[in-house]
Length: 408
Image 1 (cartoon, rainbow, N blue to C red):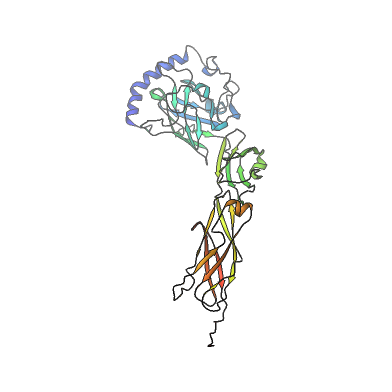
Image 2: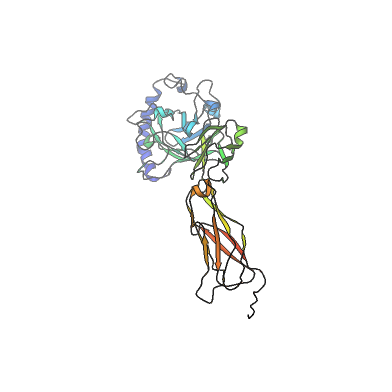
């Protein structure tokens, strides 16, 4: 993008004039050290080792832009004793602080300086691994408003932006400062390197809430890195702020959730590092049910033709907030067909069980199966809940002795 032909033409023809105007405007006379001039000493521009962004970006129009006084001097020397400034990613992953250019002065990333940006979201922020929003030169002139866009804006036609590689912690890509600043390269192939994140990203390595029977309290487990506190919340009103409160406890945490599960629930774990950067992960235990059969093996005694099995009780175990009614059907296709007109059938004492019946009152449906034609050994049938959601298999044992018919 920096090498786009049209932008090079504009930069060469227009940028030089603008820069000359800015240079005269910003120097303002015989100032040998602009960073020590009262005009550039911002009392709120505190930095430095406490800031977590350092290094330099490059603009072909205005040169180097320093992001931290710790390496802002000649040969990347520390000049914080005479001019404190720096940029950080802090709470809510927002950028704060000031960068410095010898040619255009202070560049602010503070939300208070970004109100009224040209379009889109004004706040400078790291969203995922991409920078969004704006920065602004505090002392623009010559008709320029000082805005620097950190990524493609709504309705923009050119795709650009700055991303952070979370493995090597280097920013890459371009911001756009109109025709005055032009393209700002965050990872230039020059002596000073690029813009680097020096902090520690908070990360959630695992987050799990094991299945729990509906109506019980679940337990959350998680592991993290570079995290000093975590909040655990749910879409059903549960909230545990500071569920863990130091790096040791947050690194491998077990937390009882003091709220019964009565519906499918989305849990959100939000964890923060010492700079209040945050990362979040969601977990939704899937609501479902199991069927039980007691016993799972029944017997049938063929005396003559058809016969009925001994009973079995079909129960429902709901998990993770499942509360729906459950209706039963039985697949009897494995039973041998009758040569006559009779068919196999299932007899449930309750064809459907409601949540209050199967969980609160512990009611089960009693099942007996009628087989119209004798068989030897075992056959298996399948009982389904809600057509085909969950099932349980039942073995029907007819024994190994063929019935003997004698003439009377």
